[in-house]
Image 1 (cartoon, rainbow, N blue to C red):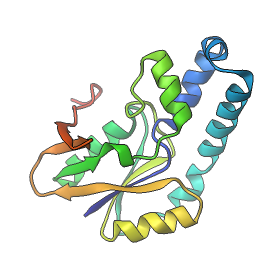
Image 2: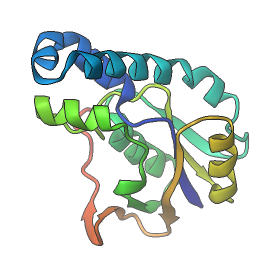
Image 3: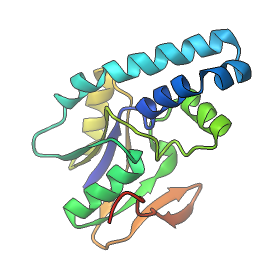
Image 4: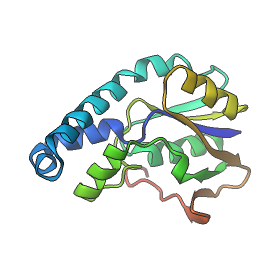
Length: 168
């Protein structure tokens, strides 16, 4: 099956981080940039309800919450009893999230990601295009694998997805 990620990774967590660190963010970014960050984070969070209704019933999907996209990938692979090969660069991610995470020393893929869905589906390319046409940040990021290896690929280098700390 294909792996589609719909919604921006780390968006809801970015909004929380931004609010908790508003002074530091305000000191590091110009006011116009801060306003744009606030607007983008708010707009992205309102799209989650609409996105949920567009996921096909025959797809296996999981909303990324605490632990972010990485935890959702770990969980959904466990539920499906499979491994995966996922191109990390394909995951939808706002530049504002990247910059905020760099400022605060956080990993955007482990930030809370409510409203972002990891979807295992046949015909993921078609699904991704349909969700994009509805205005949702979406990408076909990889595929499931028959073995149990949960591999992330970045610039041709493979590494194993680390089991999230909050799982036993």
